[in-house]
Image (cartoon, rainbow, N blue to C red; front, top):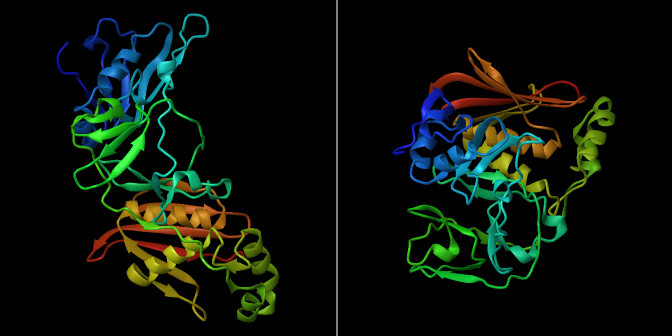
Length: 338
């Protein structure tokens, strides 16, 4: 059948036509930009997406999401719907392997510290982890599930640089040939993330901000509004062990390094400068800080806008479509409402 044809539909979608394989019952739709397409051409994931389109009873198109990479049956990121009467149930569609690491494997969190996976107690499962897409960038991802079990067999990888990791046979490792199950890695080079982080140490318990501290800074007319909101969001009292404290530190560091702050008697405002994708991460951290859903608004002629809103407060962030020496400008305006 030769090279798989990937017909560009728009900037973020390509399609594999039914003419690629006579057995295909529908098209395969992949959500990928040009940079991603260049990566996935080097593994079997497009062919796997086309194979899904051959399955009996498929409804609509076989699809693959932006996290597409080679799997065992479906590509990872593959999605398909099947007719209840004429369709099939395939364990390859959701995965039938359990890819596990040994309990002493150190996992890098989005906050920069690392922790053995066995020490991820229930209280720590809300900590976002560092997630790497090799063709793009490192992002933060939440933990979806946490399981423990005893494996019958495990393998140990030892690199020439001295890095060791123990995992089950099915655990995929990134190699020059794409994601390869550990049992098949052999002497292939494996990718190692260069930043290992720092070992986690429980901070000493210390109260940093109390309700009395906030009350001293506010006029009487604002205390009845602001303090209950901070309390409801888990920000008062603020201690060194508060799970939201790292987000405050990150925001403070960004403002001091690549931004500015306007405080009373002026209108309160924080401005941050950076690339759009980095500023999106900042806005997501603010959403975690105030316990509000992150919402991305449509493109505008002068740029685009992202908002985190509640019934009592609104943070507006705007990226103006203009480039200067420092990059894109992103302003967080603390609006009236508290």
